[in-house]
Length: 248
Image (cartoon, rainbow, N blue to C red; front, side, top):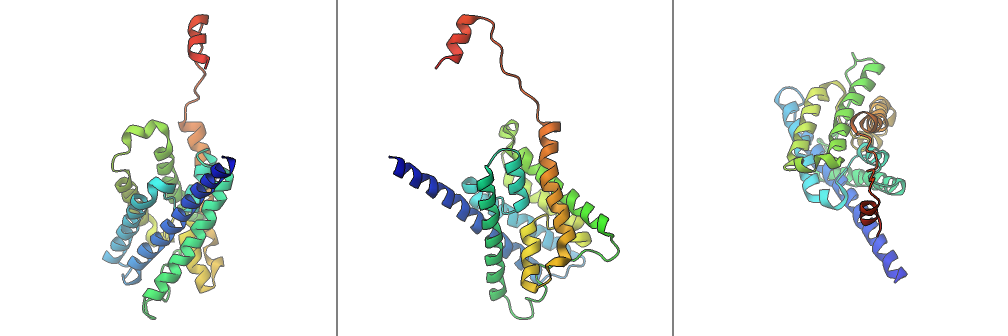
């Protein structure tokens, strides 16, 4: 019986881990493929942002009920800090997300012609922005995303979950429109790191990563202490009622 229970647990963990791997791979392929042929001036920036948001909708619709479809290490870190998953599952998710992003980006490069693979999905901040401004913009945009996920996980939002995938997609689209031309507005360490690793220049995105990780660690604390009420245990004075409700 114990052996069978252990097998079920391992199967459950594997299913969730593979779901995050698949979700991140699919997200990388769709979101980066959409920007490969678009000029990032004018309408091209709008199209890329919409594709980014719609990729979020697709991933959440397919894999959301399996693993949550984080497809983002920042979201997973926040989920762990808020107590919705354990630390071991958090590290498993992050590993699978990075591996899935690498696999998805590799497949994308194989599907594109030689001319389109140059600089695909590479984000570069404006030269006029200071280091502090780059970190601040990425931290702010990622904070908006983490706040949205925190609200989604909160039990008080249970009656507001209709069309949640579409609403999350709209939020991602808006954030990308707002900051896409400034810092890239990826709001996702996997999406910003993996393309740079393939192109051999990971040092260039340390500021974006710093802002994203700052939001991942700070926003859950704000949500917990500022937006979550402290519930007190129910005090039952009558001994008969107390025994009726508290005894097994």
